[in-house]
Image 1 (cartoon, rainbow, N blue to C red):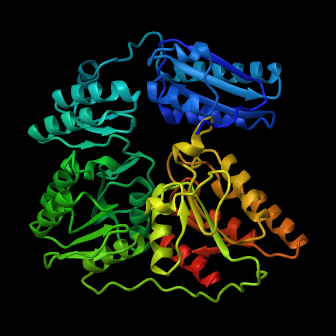
Image 2 (image 1 turned 90 degrees about the vertical axis):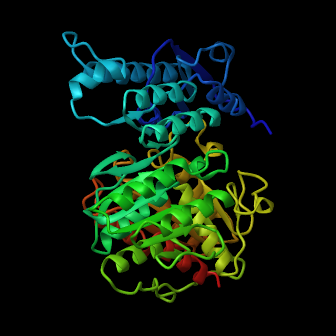
Image 3 (image 1 turned 120 degrees about the vertical axis):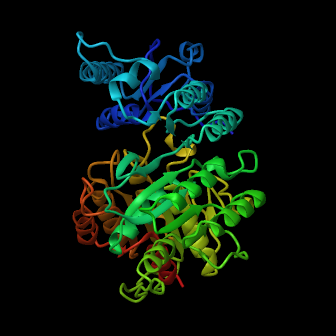
Length: 513
């Protein structure tokens, strides 16, 4: 269903043949949205998929519709033409500043892998963030030159992903992605990643924020990471066959610095799951498997199953330390309920898609069925994205919510607005939120949400209600945003804090039990 068009003026500019990666474009959009007179701002490459999304949001005009995939589309929805003009000026300034930083006039910036490799010497990984229609070809070029690939780009055709991964496998190279958001290779973070200790536990994951959480929890439990290898979510589909996951398992099994291996993913296709379990059984090391939402299956003696992200990390640490895993403990009574009789539902507002999935799994295990825009069961799809129904878990980083805005890990505005909406609902008892730290995330994500949390509590109190906010922080003290600083801001605002994503959702479930 097409969304309603806004009455606010929409202005569009094109930058022909100017490519910028999605994270850089989201950063620029975030700057524009700091102006309260700018309603929406989006900067995207003019790929068919992006244009379709803009059309669905009512942000695509005739000029943009004719743009080529190599063109940059800039759309601003503002209170006046003057505000839009000022916004476009800020875009030009940001783009020109980036161009100056990228290289001087005296230096020829390499435009191909063949040009870059002689300058980089021992480089063995190519990081690619290009429009999806081109990214597959670039990844194949990188593989042909002998490079492993971290493919951040999304919207890469599935057939191209298969071709690139099969070519890489034949050359003994690894392709992480497409749509691979996080990896840590030899201590070097790629994409969205956290600052964690080096250590003896290796992970492979078809999940970005899931990989962030298990690496963070491993760090907090006193161990460290050898490598954390993202595969991209489609890798475990039957068509791809788990090529990257299986190769990553072999690499970690052969790595002398890795003593324990962890696997995180939604349930793979049956044939892929069988292949992964069989390969894990031959690893010669303990392997911990977390297939979120999946059923328990028969596994070899060295393969241990867990049902959530914390237990996955804890089991890996326990096996490394030659002890038994400790089940996650939490005090369900640390915060009085105090809600009115009408308040009975949990509303989850997540920036991380895996956290939204884990919340649904944990609630289901507690006997609570939730609706979602990314439901475990298609029959539980939320009917109207603009309104929650009963218990609702929303992935605000899904395309449904990011059209015209940066990802919520960068820009909090969508979540700020939704907090106010959910708190105003007389049936809302608990609002559950994640705070994701690390490279490329918002510089102060908790601080950006605290004013909205406080206002929501004040407004609810004026109506004789009390809304409880349950939050957790995915991050470490070494992250730029500093975990303890973020937690202190949330506590000061009256939030209940979980020590992990798993604990937070269990707390929320206990509060409405």
